[in-house]
Image 1 (cartoon, rainbow, N blue to C red):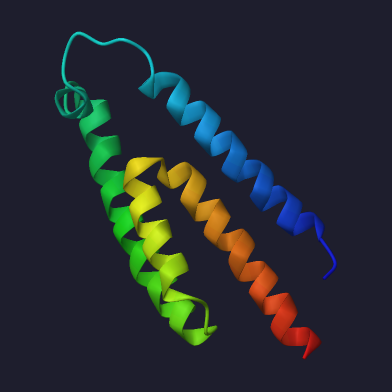
Image 2 (cartoon, one colour; image 1 turned 45 degrees about the vertical axis):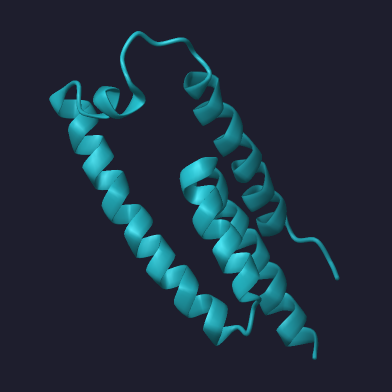
Length: 108
């Protein structure tokens, strides 16, 4: 299967998503992570915004998994990784895997 520029872009975004989030996740902190999410109005707004976006992504990705006949084990892994690693990694990773599936379906 041919690797496209879009696939490379999604792959790079997934790697960047891990790096930029975990750099801050690994920093020592004096307060709890959850408390930090709501420590300012800006961070609370961003936290709530991200929660809505993640919910929409998980619903959409579940439907896409079914529509494209992708593995539900893959979707389950994306669900877990969204909360354990970072949505900044799982969203572009799912888009990469979706793009590869679409190309594979077109070649049939």
